[in-house]
Length: 123
Image (tube, rainbow, N blue to C red; front, top):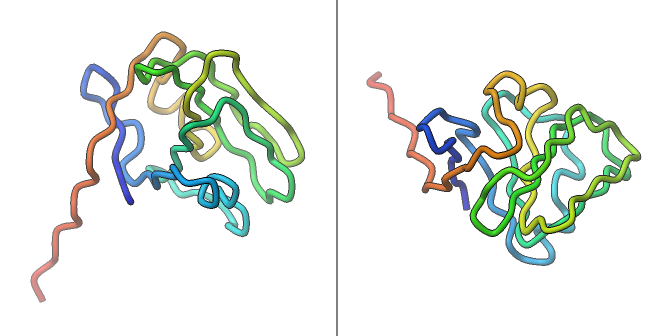
């Protein structure tokens, strides 16, 4: 299922975010992918930590509490690293540098919404 995430002020954080709520989808995460594009991500919930074993690229990891408030941002987390945050209930994984680009920081609150369907172009 695709969702989009916005900051509480309405600014877009992630336009196309895969929602990973099953054990298998959380386990798979981003494994096997070559990277994330701008505006793309994955929301793992429940989750309070992640690992970057066998990953081929760096990401920004955003740790969220029960109310989707940002507790911690681990920027440019590289392959073969671990990250976690006490009290986190979800982890948003974005392309490296996205948190800085969109201005996402601890204390911000994000809102999860159904992703907008792409608009079909007329031929």
